[in-house]
Amino acid sequence: MKKILFINACVRQKSRTKRLADALLGRLTECYAHNGGSKIRELILKEEERGLKPLHESDLVRRERATEKKSFDDPEYFFAEEFSKADIIVIAAPYWDLSFPAVLKMYFEHISVNGVTFRYQENGEPEGLCRAQMLYYVMTSGGKVGSLNLGYEYVKAMARVMFGVKDTQCVGAVGLDMEGNDAEAVLKKTEEIIATMKIPSGQ
Ligand SMILES: Cc1cc2nc3c(=O)[nH]c(=O)nc-3n(C[C@H](O)[C@H](O)[C@H](O)COP(=O)(O)O)c2cc1C
Image 1: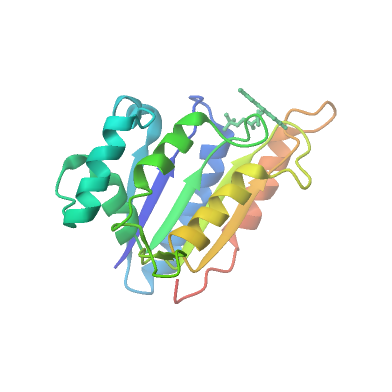
Image 2: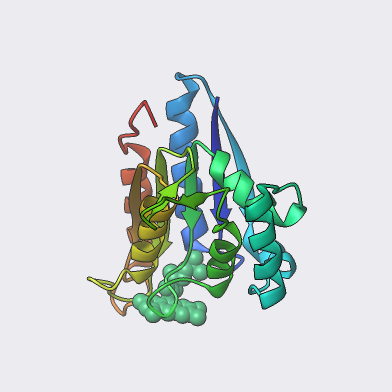
């Protein structure tokens, strides 16, 4: 049974990014149905905002103590524990100001816990402690993105370098708000691509 953690950083009620994420989750569910099954846990970040405040100095002091004692029972480490144990991670985030909504950065601050999602090796380099084989990053943008897919680049680096997630993939649709573009047609086409996307069986 694959544990899929769906981190929903979409803000708008009629989010097109969420629509594509739902298509991907459907595809993953379908693929794993013949391969041990899967279970999706959705974490809706806009509903968690109060618990996801930016970290203050007092939070850092508590966290350092927890790392020293290797004791992470406190609920404030729940998100980090959950992230570290997922088999597959799906993040959905609209392209905002060249990256993503701030609540997703706050989430990353909360899951970057030395001793849970990563640890430092003797040479000072981070070693990932997460079990996920794959992280999918689902995004949509209003305009062109080109080489400035900075949200995905950040998430990819965190996942691979810090957390030890084996692989990452960006799935999405760009240019949805550009004049002359038929957003609905682009979304439908992207959903069709997702519906036949190859999902590696080991992931
Ligand atoms: C606050 C905000 C910032 C945005 N910044 C960008 C941007 O930097 N570049 C861009 O191409 N589109 C930008 N957009 C447009 C969104 O990326 C686009 O409408 C996207 O499809 C919204 O996703 P959603 O339907 O899931 O909310 C921005 C939209 C908002 C509301």
